[in-house]
Length: 266
Image 1 (cartoon, rainbow, N blue to C red):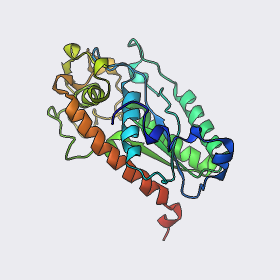
Image 2 (cartoon, one colour):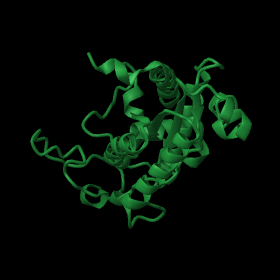
Image 3 (cartoon, rainbow, N blue to C red):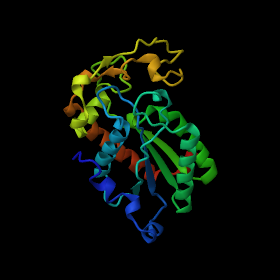
């Protein structure tokens, strides 16, 4: 079930498997094109730098299995690099600048529009991409007419399953991300190196230290490069997160396929 890049996501619904003629003949009225966006960045001493993109691919694999074969949902190859400014300087981090990522996203969107598509979904698994994707979604809407939606991995998390055993702060390389990687690539995880480091952040709702509203970089808040307790991770928890999150992703994509922007006006 969790074999990487095997399944309907990478076959039945994989847009680049189609020929020019087949793409031209697609019914694009409700078609949704999914552009996955992750990151290559440090995740502490125990996780691969490919963590965010690996998690992205894994949720896609699970989510697309839940789609009907004839669902008008099409997958583009994942964009493995994101805006990882907060991790620059740590070995293994490869970041795009904001201007570069913005240009890439706009070029992809324009290409899709020229092919006749009308709806684009950014499926994002890196927190450092969120603000930029929100901004670009509106710019793309204005410039190309595409309907753009950012679907962040956290939006499809089942609240009944996503129960942190260390609830104070688990945002990078902690229990959740480590569990997810254990579920799909156990041999990529060095659990003997797993840290437990919870940043001592103020809890003021006005300053919002938990969000990017406060411009911290990772070295400001963590020595190990993580924020969370990776020692609590286990593969079974990761598998459950993937299964439930995949079902929610499929439901969201089907809703977006039937969504009509014109329905927002009274």
